[in-house]
Length: 238
Image (cartoon, rainbow, N blue to C red):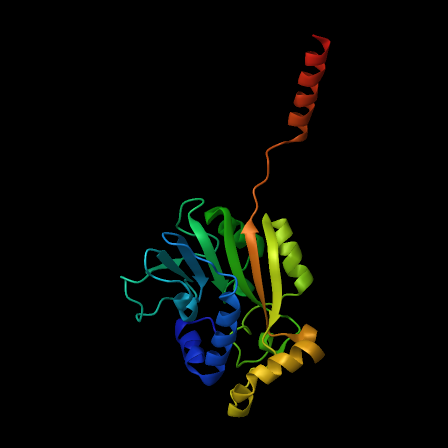
């Protein structure tokens, strides 16, 4: 379930989907700071969150995998919509200033290759925002959830994921404590669930909101270090 554009679209039209979008968007707004003429990429199913980025003077690319597909409700004037094969984005190196990834990484066959590809197309000091399901939460297991089709994550796994793939972690925040049930009583009290859940059920959040920067490594190998030391010794003997 939830590997198709129509399924995601139907979910986000429901009251449950609207509540999820509202809370995720509210949190992301605190972190996303896009300046004029910057380039932003959405990867996975980012359609509900495209309005987080001001269209004026910014270029926005919306990437959907072959599994999900692309809907027809987005105009070409607003966004560039691109279908892509997993592990290969048809974009040059260091292209994006910001990338938002949602409903994607939990479904890929090779997590490392996909993260390295996202690292490749992100500009130096560029920022990536990733929404991931918590493996302990019902949002990762319920058929009502758009996060139920793939594997879940722990906070520790996310930390190592960034470390192993050349990203500098900025924040990993827990969010969504109301259950994935499309009941009006739950939707009306979602803020109460968030407040109570973050205190009593802290480790059972529905999703993680992760923010990281592209990290560049200096090319100082052990061989280079030895060469520098030799030069210092030669200079001292002169």
